[in-house]
Length: 359
Image 1 (cartoon, rainbow, N blue to C red):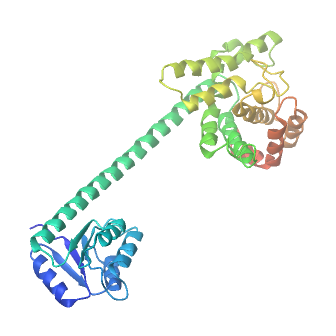
Image 2 (cartoon, rainbow, N blue to C red; image 1 turned 180 degrees about the vertical axis):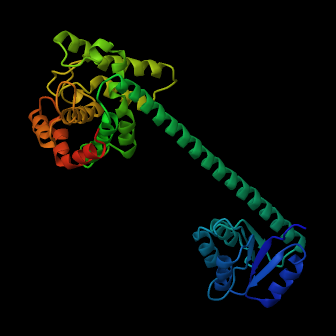
Image 3 (cartoon, one colour; image 1 turned 30 degrees about the vertical axis):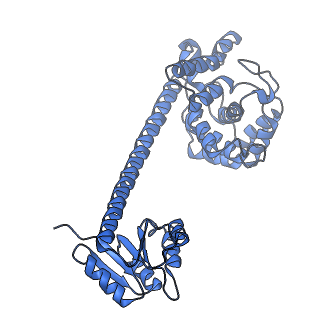
């Protein structure tokens, strides 16, 4: 046997409550309330499927009751039918404007009341079913989106690590530079100039794109990339091509996708331009000033700092303080002076990351 739906009757007249209860008791579970306050107490403590509400009541009339129902999140979806002797057009308009789903005039016709109740309960059931389905679908979309995002992150890391395995003694360089960029971008976002540019979403894209900054090293010959010692001038010119190679590799991947992918746009910027210098003396395009993409200006500081504090076959790791001194000398020549100042303001954060992810 199907469970009965619950109808809440709200009327200050006992005779009306008794009459309606008699009409509805065979088909519904009926709860009666003789005041608006009592009705609200019931609604807040018991499950109710539909409310039949009188308007003319002392202390709190039906209009006030429905206002409170619709203003309460957990009650707002319960259908409310006005059952009243107020039968003017203005009364009906007001009732509907306050959120009533129906308006029945007294004296009532039992078949009409029963038919209206069935209709609105069915509507609510379908609406609840649709809401539950939408909630489920939204949950599934979020789940699948996270899975895709996690897969993307894993792919990025795998690609970046592939490039780094061909470059000796880089260790946790990828993770450190990724975190440096995120912290520096977050700091820069506190400045009025960048607060609307460096949103949380953009900073996350910078963070995700950063590991691909040296992906172009995959295209550098082993004799140069794996050389034990300093490169000759000719060899260094070949090494410098990794910036353009990285850009082209990502651009090629982008061609396989339809539409602009913001993540890949930023990845291309970082891969090609993180060796550009503020004064225009960098490579591969010789960009200067703010013509250098912001993502690449951030990566430039992160990459150089990490290179200085890391041991290489041709040099020992520098102490943090010495690295700061050298980077500071590049203010306005190698590095964006404004970004460099913010780097110096959070240099202890960089040091902490370097220690946490030391090779």
